[in-house]
Amino acid sequence: MELIVRNLTKQYGDKRAVDDVSLRLTEGINGLLGANGAGKTTLMRMLCGILRPTRGSIALDGIDVSSEDYRALLGYLPQEFGYYPDFTGLDFLLYLGALKGLSRSHARRRAEELLELVSLQDVAKKKIKTYSGGMKQRLGIAQALLNDPRLLVVDEPTAGLDPKGRVRFRNLIAELGKGSIILLSTHIVSDVEQIADHMLMLRAGQLILDAPWDKSRTDLEQLYLEEFGGAEA
Image (cartoon, rainbow, N blue to C red; front, side, top):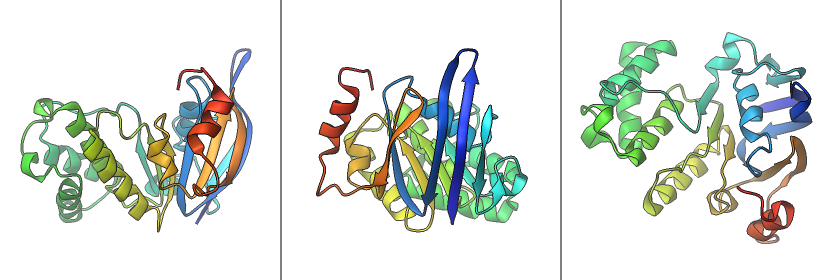
């Protein structure tokens, strides 16, 4: 399984949000770091087929990003995901399962598994509008995993989670990374330095780091501060 990105560019008027990025990602956890405005979210939205590149190509095992087959292999958790407040957590996952083409029995089985995985089984039949911010974020993680994605893209996934929740999430991602390509964007360095196999850094839309990660050899916090200094994360 490999994701190939070639010469990816996104232009908005005179500004290049993503500037000629090429990379190859394989199974494992790929951390993505950069200050605000670096182009991280724009890059991820293109990888998910939400934004069309100005130039360049994206393919997962030869399957183009524009195809239904690509989307069937994709899981995405944006910074803020949409939900229906009057749905229960379980009904919301069943609804998304139907949209993803899962049979009702498969969707229910998978939804129940995931609600337990993210510790929401006790509130599965409560309306989402009663959930705390952290609970909503955990529901977002569950919906991204519904179709057993081979490519999982997550943007600031631990926002709103308490320290215990962040540890639980890191353990979950570490397990998923054994069989999937995961791209994890965060401003919390500790969320990626413990589990990443590969590290990417963006600055002004350009890829300035694309390398295997060995936490025993490099201080990621220090490297991040050297690259971005006082820039807002």
